[in-house]
Amino acid sequence: MDVNALHTREEVFKNAAPSLHTSRLSVHDQRHAYDLFSANFITALIGLVYFPGHKIPTSADTAIKLSTTAGAVVGQVFFGWLADKVGRKKMYGLELIIMLVGTFGQTISGRGPAVSFLGPLIFWRVVMGVGVGGDYPLSSVITSEFATVKWRGALMNAVFAM
Image 1 (cartoon, rainbow, N blue to C red):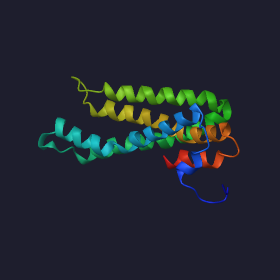
Image 2 (cartoon, one colour):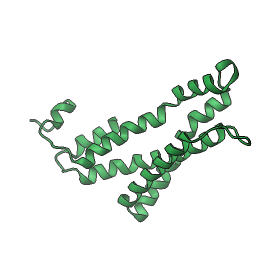
Image 3 (cartoon, rainbow, N blue to C red):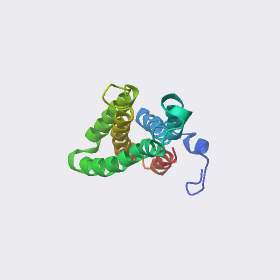
Image 4 (cartoon, rainbow, N blue to C red):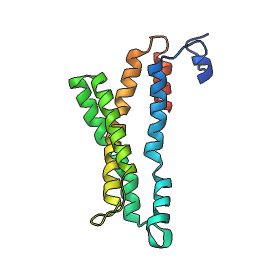
């Protein structure tokens, strides 16, 4: 097999046995795509359920769609810096906890007598975005650290392709 030739993903991993850690990172990154880009579906359903005329206002629609992305930008910068100071492995677990807390917070967001459901939902989407953003720089670096030299490039490609 020529190392310099381009290969399909199946050919690259045919003779490799990816570690459990690398497999977990692939699933991790697929979930990020859902976390970041599911907002169009979410806002359509929120409009159907909560707003008259089944149309969500443009300001609420924009806030829901941008909240996770804004949190991801903050998370990338913050966790990239913090991982250099404290350690990547410690921060990798922390950002996972932040993502889980943000996701759980979104599931329990609802109407209340004093507050609309939009405020808490947007807050929890920002929290989840911080976790997602923290995972981007950490997952790629951890993948390259744990991969053998032979498969490092292919695994890095797989992380960013997800």
